[in-house]
Length: 189
Image 1 (cartoon, rainbow, N blue to C red):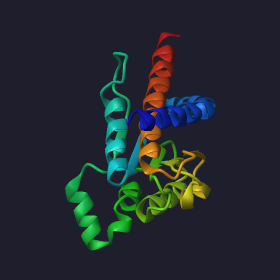
Image 2 (image 1 turned 90 degrees about the horizontal axis):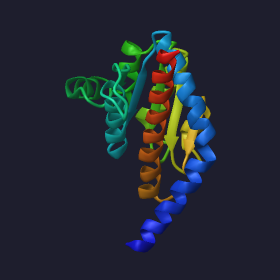
Image 3 (image 1 turned 180 degrees about the vertical axis):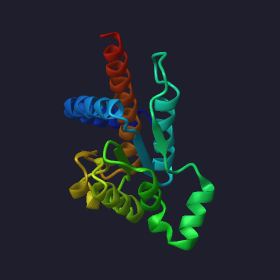
Image 4 (image 1 turned 30 degrees about the vertical axis):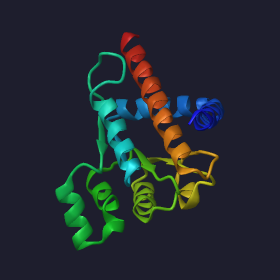
């Protein structure tokens, strides 16, 4: 257990150190797009769905600072839409169909898949690019099929899914912190 914690800490430190400038750039891009009327749209499967909901909750609620809500939608929360789309069109369409309804060119679309190959996440990122959204991927080693579909890609350099997931949630917290600070600072100017 202690050895696992050491491996997690080492992977996490390396990942966040390497990606800190990219996280800051993404936060600035996100704040600029929200100012233009955009929103964050996020999705994934299983644990990645939980991470998507967590990210949206930090935007709509708050992360650390008291502030107005920021627009964010997790496409994993409406079970009626998910099951209707899955039944009528197929599971691979559950996110892309919702994006077709909700996404616009000022939006930041975030797909989360530890493998980078989840068909429904890949298809949704393709749809987001058609709509000219800013696309972001959180994935594992190599990026999978998501690699060529993202304006910004965070690929954790390990094949071990639990480490990838641990890095994803830490990245989400760092991203929320940066967005929130930039948002509050911009209101004070």
